Image (cartoon, rainbow, N blue to C red):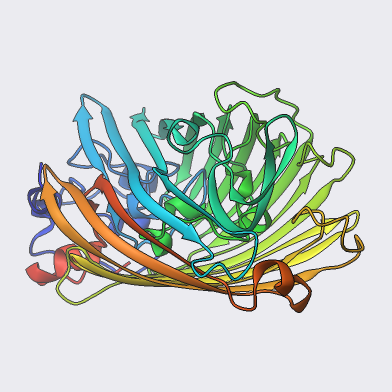
Length: 471
């Protein structure tokens, strides 16, 4: 089904009706609901739990929130966030698939200003499937599987990225100036939500592997990073727990607030990207989320990670994050929107006291996009494999600015083929300039294949029919 025909199907049941702007009433944000427009029951649980005309098109962890709010794991996006993917209904089940496949030429340190650059032709990728259905009058059941063939398409060292660090390869060698490949199975999870009433849900989530509530939606799932194939340099300060072999989370939602707690495995994935690591359940986290309007998603979180790095097994980390995600449709609707993210992450504990920050934005204008990312991160000599040259108490400040553009060149079966290019200018700490150069520059060009627009913001979908459909 094309994106246009799917959107027409979703909005057909709403034409000519005015809806409340109360952001707490999540079922009102969400097009495609099969509402009876005669007399309605006063039972709020019956009213909130009404089936959707397309077979239960709700959020993965609430029957009363819009699907657009889905993030990675149990995190929240703004309600105005567009969704890309394929969707099919099979009986009582709603099935979804989304992902990305890149073909990329990547050159770090274009002008050979330092000695740490590298060049690679590779194909980053990830694929995710989800199935969910309503259970009785109050329940919601959800299964999810996420996979990546990164090691097959880029090798066990991942891809070159100046100043990146985290995890190991080749029998315990530290990965430096490279982003590690993701595991074959990044998520196999099950979640169940029980609706107490329209405004309150309780839910449980179990993954092996899965994502505990630490940080915002992981970078691969943030629409503000949709066109950028690179991992943020602050990934291991902000959202690196998205692959955890053993996670159990419980959460409670009240209107637009959500509080979660989790017990999970603190150790990051090992070098064998095809196996299932030992479940330790030795770490903990909590996250508070708040969506004040359709355009904003806010969160603060803290994780107490037991021995996250195998190369430093005695080091525990306390990871604290805060973020604000923003999404807004642009005039004209469809695949036209502006999204941004502001994220701070801090690693403390032991000798760790390093900050990171990121500001990224994506302006999607149908087939054309302009995007950017500014990053600040503090790195230690150990993370950059420089302990033989610097005292371990040193902390290096690194800045990076990325600008890029992409152009959709083909569309078929609601699948997009896009070509893009981007460049990054780095400003390293003065102590690092002899190794990296004064202002090293990196660049890449790519082709990307991904599912097309499945669901824009509800306001964009319904504005052409004159509806007052506010989130």
